[in-house]
Image (cartoon, rainbow, N blue to C red; front, side, top):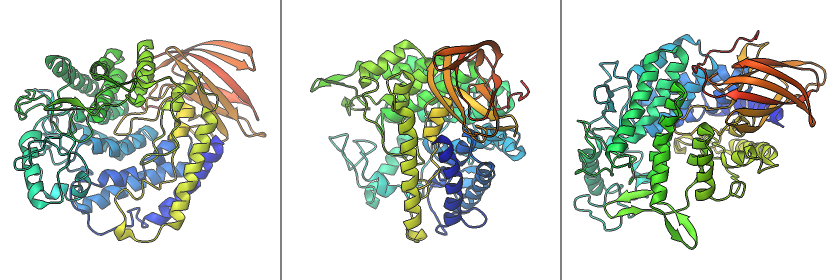
Length: 586
């Protein structure tokens, strides 16, 4: 089923591109698109192409993925959102979404000359090295605005910037209860963004308080810098990520253990917010609260831990999950934690969602983090199974964790069956889609893209899918085809990592070809950051081979029709992470 799905997605990608793009790769859509929003959605429509290639998809997915990335870049340059091949200005939730596409391309082909130049240029905009794009202040270790990009930091948002989002945000709680002339008693109440007079006051208030300055969301930028480190190995990139994450840890300590969601232009907490540590852009109050704050802290900490090998960086997101839990209440026998903060205190109580905790535990492998999941989110293995795909196909990690802990015997079959069902559903949507490009929303293509490999990634690489708003691919095992000298599972080979621990992983390998042998190279970690220490071959219940290994990669020969299970000892974070391919002769 895994090999069948890969092949079907290879073909589905062709149908998808043929229907919705011009010959030059640009999307068949309207002639104009206003505001600062939208280019991320164009990129998201195809970001799964290089992701599937990394798993074992066709060569066409890489070449088409690169061509379509460049086409989206040209198209949204014409619309006005992109400048010098990068978003002119927007926030790092959206930069993070689109950035994963570029990172997957770099990971797939780390010697691509133009992408190497782009990666360097993009990173310089966020390390303080580009004087024409001064998004980052290295002296204060802070970003200068929550709205930033290739045009530099934005210090005043305009009505045009929000033109496409006003109808959407009219359904969200207001950014503040005390917008002049439109005061509210209830922090969950909305204001009418579609009313020009009301919107004018909202925008004026947001500009006065939210910009300029830094916000936790900007930690998503560390993936962009981490990408450059994996390409080049230059120490300045590692140092920047560690320094920036450490700066947010220090602000958290300074604020009594709560990460402030706004840092003013001189580096002071609450400087533009009447001294309040809450109220910033994508902060504890607006629009999503704790979910996005903790996600950004988690992405930054994951990247710092990856680049330095120091897992203590994970204390930053862990501390905020613990802080929220300390403010829990009990309702109907259920412990619930808050998700937002406003003038009257914490609110928005609910049972903690397990996903942040799962990503934390995946990297830490700390038993205390596992205990946090069970205590706060309910028994592992008893959560409802996710049967839908969000946006570009994000696959829930909850069932995956249950399988890794031996609490699900059906995970692998469920993953392939759910993926097949949703791929078929999306193909049906494509084939019956009415041809009205002028009426399509900017999310139209990502919602029906039939290339949805996240479930296959979880199965084969032994990790949750990357965090959607910009997380890197923190996988336990990565595969290469030594005969083709390319990433991904070789033709006919399938893999299932059925167990991961702090110092080991177990993987089932199958050569589905009954006539030809195959070879596959296994790498410890998505970036070779781990080190294999031993390999035990298990056939049935019998240990048939036990070898010591001292390498981050080795090659396995699979005769025709072979199925084996390997127990692999592993020392985690023992090596400098890199996109470089392993030595296939090893």
